[in-house]
Image (cartoon, rainbow, N blue to C red; front, side, top):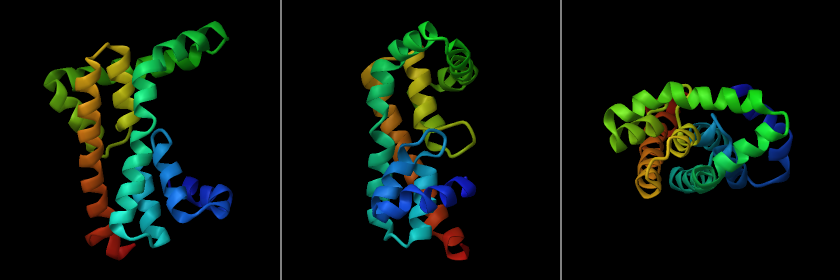
Length: 164
């Protein structure tokens, strides 16, 4: 992640404000809010301002994933990108039992606990592909994003943030 953040700041980041850099990084799959908050700390953005930009950046793609990912996958499969679709569907299938075991709480924890391969994008992908109730999935993902914000703010701006 550090390499990506360095690349981002040396290319795109030099043309936009630090806050918009954090917002955009928080929208990127797999990096998401976690990377955004680390970047915010590195750029010296005040904690509360960083949280707002990161949470908003992480939330923005979620409704589109929940509503349109199946249509996008069908289009991709029709346009010779079925391998990509298969890999993403396999990732969703692999993570479904983790979420199914605890229902909405499982989705909150899956999105909120910063582990490799978890996060809002993957949580929304699983929710959409397996036809979870849209309202319940949206609320669970939002709560997961807020949980991730608490955890990553503690990491970035808390005790570990003082070492960075």
